[in-house]
Image (cartoon, rainbow, N blue to C red; front, side):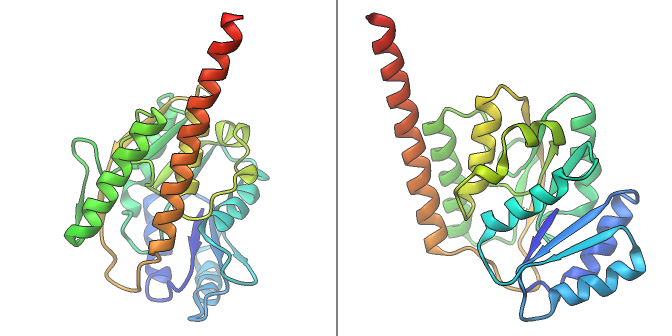
Length: 241
C-alpha cells in the first residue's frame, strides 16, 4: 500500500521494482490527484504488470488520510500481510521480502528502521538526520516505546493486528500517524520488531516534509505522553482508595 503525490518521475520504475521483489503481491496505489499525472501513469503501468489497483482521491488530504483510506481498502481484502512504503526509492523494494519474512516468523508488525544496528541513512543533509534521530528518541522516550524509528513508513503488518487497532479511527495526519499506529500496537500487546534498512534520500521529486508536519508530530506525541501519565496517576489513585 503506497500513498503517492507528485511521483511521476518514480512511479513506473517503482511498480516494476516491487513486482520484481514480490511477484505475487497485490499493489495498491493511493494517489491524491497528483497534478503531474502520477495516478494516470500508475494506471497505464498496472495494465501491463497486472494485480495493481489505483485509488484516485479528489485532492491532497494529508498523509494520515491517505494511509487510512489505503488501509481500509486493503483490510477489506483477503490478505495476511499489509506492507506500507514510499514510492521515491528511499525505501528499497528489494527489502520487502525481509519484512514479510519477519511476519512469517511470528512478529505482528515490522518497522523498517534506520536507527538500529545495520540501519542508516544516505544522502540526507545533517539537519534532517539530526531532526529525525532526535525526534524519534524523544518520541520513543516520552511514550515508553521500545521502537527506535517510530516515524518510518516502511513497514509490514499482520493484517489481523492492523485490523484490531482500527487505523481508520486515528486522527493524526503527518508522520505522527505512523507513531500513533506503533503506540496502539504496543498498547494492545502486539509484537513489534525492527528490521534494519538503509534509507536513501530521493533522487527525483521533492520531499513532503514541512515544519508544520514536524510541529504537529511533536505536539501530538507530547499530548499522548501527558495523557498516558495522567491515566497512570488516576489508576494509582483508584487503587489506593
